[in-house]
Amino acid sequence: MNIYPILKPLLFQLDAEVAHDVTLASLKWAERLHLLGANTNQYHTTPRQVMGLTFPNAVGLAAGLDKNAAVIDGMATLGFGFIEVGTVTPRPQPGNPRPRLFRVKQAQGIINRFGFNNLGVDHLVENVKSAKYKGVLGINIGKNFDTPNERAVDDYLHCMRKVYAHASYITVNISSPNTKNLRALQEKEALSALLASLKFEQTKLTEQHSQYVPVALKIAPDLTPTQVAEIADLLMQHQIDGVIATNTTLSRDAVQGMAHAEETGGLSGAPVKHASTAVIQQLSQRLQGALPIIGVGGIMSGADAVEKIAAGASLVQLYSGLIYQGPKLVNDVCKSLG
Image (cartoon, rainbow, N blue to C red):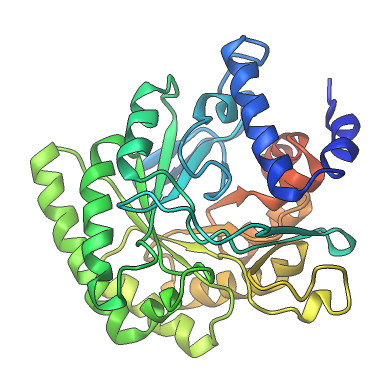
């Protein structure tokens, strides 16, 4: 039974972040009380082989919804083929002051300026270790807000070492617009140095743990075609395993004049769909299959997901669409992708 249409008006009466917290807390308690289905792969579709991993279906949970890996088991009951938690930083940090999450209802959009609020990588690892979930788990890592970009690599390597043994794959987030100057790490010289360090560390950790954990890079939708081409070339040069396109956008072109449209932060949901798909197409043309693309941004229906796959993505991820459409969206996308 789909009760989300009943719950949604109640949740939308609450402050957006309060509703977010209530939803996660409710999911956690429902899972603990065994009120949710036990089947973690509800929607049986054609498995996908991506980054050397087997995904039971192509639909994943995007990072940002479960920052501390607190509700992995609850999320698993919704039928995702994979789950990505985080973004997590070396040290706990509160993020930006509230309010920092806003609905742009007219456009089915969300603006957030959370700023990597999380309880730190050690806390996340303990949550992952205590979860029953045995499916594909991505862990998304970032840097602390007060770590200068010149030392950002230290934060990424610290998190990588901590999560390596517990992740199916690791995502490196250099594209959130809510940590000052973070997106500067997407620039050619800085990115090349970061990717070289990550690849070297991955090689060491593979030997140490006798296990190869793929590394993916998450990029922004606000890049020029030239920047996308440069990033694609660097991903191939440094043999990175995958790329996630895209994060939230700073553009407000699609929401001008709407309530909350002028709030600072990253815009997600339907308004970012076309920009995200354009980046996927550009990456696909440049990469020519050298590494897989995970498409995320504005998937509000099965048709939107099909569009991402047609553009060149191998897998897709959901976040904002779940807020507007509810968990049924997972099933709808799975059915559309087959």
